[in-house]
Image 1 (tube, rainbow, N blue to C red):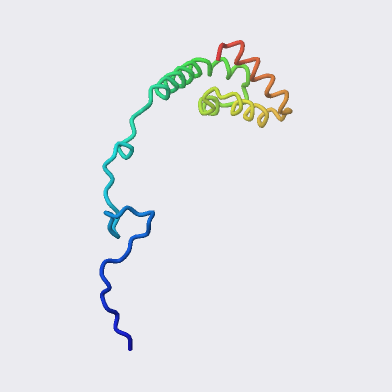
Image 2 (tube, one colour; image 1 turned 90 degrees about the horizontal axis):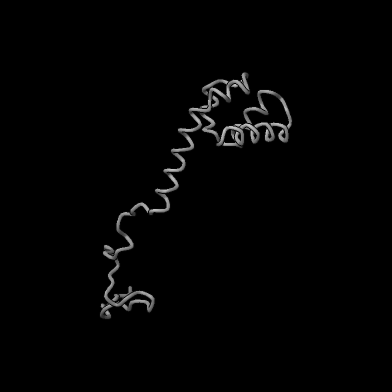
Length: 112
C-alpha cells in the first residue's frame, strides 16, 4: 500500500493565473453588467410600431382587396409582405409570383 505524502502546494497550469483557486471567482468587470438598450435598436422599434399602427388603419382596404381573408388574418400579418403574400396565395390558390405582385401593388398604393 502506497501512502501519498503531501508534496507541498499543487502546481497551477500556466494558463490559469497564480492567484486563482479551484472555485470560480465572481467577476466584477464592466462587461458582466446588465445590458442597456442601444440607441439604434430603439430607433428601429419606433419604426416597427409606426408600421403596425399604419397597417391597422389599412386593414379595411386590404379586406376589400382580398375579401376571402379575415380581418384577424390581416391583422396578424402585421403588413409583412411575405406573410400577406402567403395568405393571399393560400386562400386564392394563385401562384407565388401573382400573390407577390398583388401584395406589392397594394402596399405601394397604400404607402406601407
